[in-house]
Amino acid sequence: MKFEFQNPTHLVFAAGALSRLGEVASAHGKRALLVTGGGSVKRSGVFDRAVSSLKLAGVSVVECSGIEPNPRISSVIRGAGIARSEKCDVVIALGGGSTMDASKVIAAAVLYEGDPWDMFLHGQENVHVPASALPVITVPTLAATGSEMNCGAVISNEESKVKSFIQANCLYPKVALVDPELTLTVPADHTAYGVCDIITHVTEGYFNGVEGTPLQDRFAEGVILTAMEWGKKAVADGSDIEARAQVQWASVVALNGWVQIGTDAAFPVHMIEHTLSALHDIAHGAGLAVVNPAWMRFAAKARPARFAQFAQRIFGVPARPGDELGCAIEGIERFEAFLASIGCPLRLSQLGIDAALLQQYAQDTLHIVHDDQGRLPGCPPMGESDIVDVLRSAL
Image (cartoon, rainbow, N blue to C red; front, side):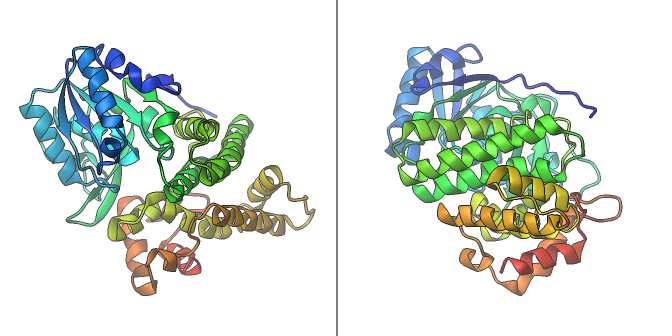
């Protein structure tokens, strides 16, 4: 292993932590752009509680609502315009991963005179990696993306139908205020999709990383087992605050850098799913539930020992000397059965996607990310026909 690691985000994790929003925000600004999604935070009363806490601490509030589930670059531009005209000095994300991702990019776009889409990899020669941004505070209302404590964001361009990502050190939130009580009203289906997203964040590194990372393997396995055990409870009973808290913590840990560090991992499943959700506007976690097991069956042929380890350690599948692939496939089948048990889709047809555009999905994915041989990075790397085959197997 050879790596550098830093995560400067100050994490505040506790039931009831929302009451501290004003306190933590006032240390970073006095005029906040409060970014929200489709309105659930207002219906639940969370928005009013957040505004009250901010005002009590002397922080004025400018609202930016309506961030989409797959956030659009037009919303980023709109939010940056509001923040700029209203002279906001801090950005607060109150919502799920989409709201947090949009907020990070808004914070950078405010200080950038060019097109914010320049910051995203979409086949252009030069990518503008921002070096400065307004301070960001994240208050997640969904356990899924882990965006609250990392420096990444994913945004869709509705005109080009491209969904891509950004990573920059200036996008690390100053504070992640994580209150599991805010997830109590999340419906069962989106709770399940979040659990799938959490697991996929760590299986990407687990299966696509370098050899010789035993501690990271155990980190990943711990996140997976925790997400499975407590995620099933949270889906069954949304009011179970203990289950909500454990899933929320798994979400934070899954993508704050601890699990992946040193693995030098690619994220092929996410890259493929981004293409699907860019074109069809499906829930990200639902898309991952379909793509991940299909990809696993493909990748297990190239790395059967790694997938057999997953089967044995996560699902207790007995070792099969001389038949590692058979052991691996049984583990994948059990994983797929778990996803079905919490209500996740398993086939593209369940998402309203047929075989008509499989070739385009593969081409669009490779347009965004490819190695020097034109393949999607991963273990193993995937050519266009490989991506098509994986998606066809998921129909």
